[in-house]
Image 1 (cartoon, helix red, strand yellow):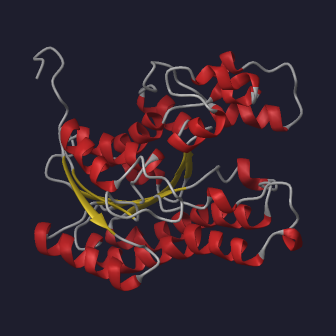
Image 2 (tube, rainbow, N blue to C red):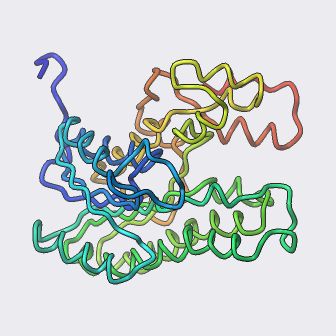
Length: 310
């Protein structure tokens, strides 16, 4: 350790569960919690021996756990399908048996990008695809909270973070597909409702959204890497405001380490908003305000520059 830049251990002794930590925001959140000294249980369906319906073999929960440990925490990979209540109950029982407590639950379960057909009306979307999106983005979150919260509420001060796409403000309009809109608005309401239920046991619940996320899947979609991601701006101009998963990872880690985080309970928050509050930056030193920028773009403004929001 560099004595001039000591490792922060704000979350030493704290136990976190990041549900849906195989890649993207979930992986980055787990790593940043680990960087603050937390023990982080990471779950997902893709392991070194098995691939989920997403079909990606390049990211696994075992790798995420190793990254958490390398960052300074302790990563524990537990293969879990969060649509199977018995598996989630077994996960909660394992955490209880091994640690005796849970301080942070991050619900980042999704994996439905391959099902979204933007531009199609509700009745033109295959019903099975639409219902699967709701299972992945809504039902899985409900099952996880129902099974895990009895452990979390044993100790005052627990934190629940619902990861979604968009804020309550940005999602007032239609989110491009009937089922996707429901799947991404539901976690916002879940956080608000859980804040109500957690209030008298000293718990906090929030929803958090990244901006335009440069996830592994998004980079592959545009045929770029993290090193040359700006090349994708020619295909998608709004990608100029894109942020790395590190940004939302740091947002959740700062929330978890904030002793006064209850002031946020029930709120719909963004990585950019939390960066302005806590003073952190993205991995490249920038501080993107994606939703500020995108709100103007979606409003039809043509003279707005992403540079003014970084």
